[in-house]
Structures are given as structure tokens and as C-alpha cells.
Amino acid sequence: MVETADYPGYASYERIGTRPSVLTQEFPRPTFNEGDNYYQPNRLLSPHFQSEDEERRFGAANFCTFLDDTIEVEHCLVVPAIVSLRRLPYDLPPQPKQDLYKTATDEGYHAEQALQFGSDLRQHFRFRSYEQYRAPLFLRRLDELRSHPSNTSYKDLITVLSGIVTETRISVELGRFASDPTLAPSVREVCRTHAEDEVIHSSQFRALGRWLWESFDEGTKAAAAEFFVASTIARSIPDVDRIADMLHQSTNRSLKDSRLLVYSTYTEDVLIDEMTAEAQATVTFLRHLGVEDYSPFSLAVEGEREKLRIGLEARRKTLRS
Ligand SMILES: [Fe+2]
Ligand SMILES: [Fe+2]
Image (cartoon, protein in one colour):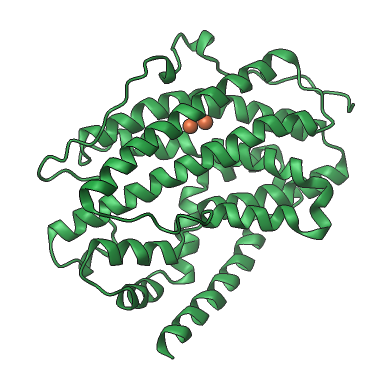
């Protein structure tokens, strides 16, 4: 076992005096009132919608994919991150370990809420699932990172670090939905209760991140820094193919037209800007740890920009041929 550093302080339900939302077993379902909005307006695609109804349907499709991501993140990222701690050579003190296990119980409930809300929306708007039999883009990227031959000894570490990455951003994202008065009350409510749990989780995963980082030797810090940065980018980069599919499902545009519009609107610079905005809380956290001394975020972003440019160009070329 690696010698453990002192464990940082963190919030818990007991200390804050709240209770996990799972104990209520109550979550809202969509009400489908006229004029209900399910997502913030999309400033890039707004000029291209033919009616308010189209725009509202696109918002609903967008919230469905947000809920899909919630299910995937909870079950395939956060819960695996907690159990993978058992396979790292760092002896977590008993109480933080116990508290992290409690968060795993919360995540299953969040996924259940997301499934119900998303199923209701899909049924009402007659949307089908996107890529039902394939993992979302960010999980595919993490799988690639884990299965790279040079990373085989770091598989569990990558899983744990990815859990830390996602848990440092989700409460901010959910809080934005919960406090937006233009959104339907049911959307705000389902995000509010989740956000309240995630404030606790975020504090616990930050403490875990700080403690692990201080426990790493120099070689592990260098490797972990790269994984942190790669995972941060993967978690927040928009999926252009999925956006095009949402546009197609919520409007009268053909899939080809939707793709043409999305691939020309979401340039590599736009995608990088959106990713950077979503990743801000995580990047600030990583910067404070000292991760950028080993792997500068800006350098990785420039590599990502070039990769995106090549990918978009290939997509446009395929559509034109
Ligand atoms: Fe959650
Ligand atoms: Fe969480």
C-alpha cells in the first residue's frame, strides 16, 4: 500500500443537515403544458427553426439526450469509479470510503428518474432513442483511452479519475437548469433535487481527487495529469452526429440536411468553445491541484481542435459525395 496523505475535508449529508433525494422516492414527470420549454435556447440553431414549436421540440430532444447521458454517467462512470477504488494501491481512510459508497446509492436513483422523465418525453414527442445499442461519445472515448496498449496498467486509475472529472462539473450544469425560470417547472424540479445531491458528491469527489493527487508519485502524477485532461475534454465535447439526429427528429429536415447544417454550424472552434465553457469548473479544480504543471489543458485543446477539424471535414466530404 502507498502511504496515504492526510484526507481533505468535505461535505456530507450529516454535516449539511440534508437527506439524499432517494429517500423521498418522489420525482416529477413532465406535465406537457402548452409552451413548456425543456432546454435553454440553442443560439446557433435558433435562426434555422421554422416555428416556435420546432424549437420547443428540439429543446425536448436535447433534454432527452441530457437524460440519456445522466443514465450513462451514473451507471457507467461514477459507480464504476467508486468500486474501482478497491483496485488502486491507495488505502482510503474508512469514513471517506463509506461516504463515497453512499453516493453510489444516490446515482442509481438519479438514473431511474432520468429514465422515467426521458421515456415520458420520448413517448409524447414520438422521438426514438439515438444509437440505442452504442455507448455515447464520451464513454467510447474513455474506452479508447483505457484500452490503449500503453495504458493497460492504468485502467482502474482512468476510471476513478473520470469519475472525479464528471462529478466536479455536474452540480454546476444541473444548477443552471434548476435556476432557469424559462424552463418548465418539472424540468427545473427534476434537476433541482439531483443538483442538491450533487453538491455533496462534488465536494466528496474533489476531496478524493486532492487526496489521490497528493498520494501519487511523480510518474503517476504525470500519467494521471494526461488522463485528467483527456477525460475532461471527452466528457464535455459536443457530439455533432447526435445534434444532427436531434435536429432531424424534431423538425421536417431530412437527416442529410440536418447534418449539412450542423457540420457547418458547429465548427471546430465552436465545439472547443462549448467544451471549454462546460469544463470550466473541472479545469479550475485541476489547475488548483497542479495538473497543468504536468499536462497543460491548452496544449491538449489545440490537439483536439485539429482532430475535430479533420473529423468535420471528412463528414462534410462524405455528405457531398
Ligand atoms: Fe447523480
Ligand atoms: Fe453524483
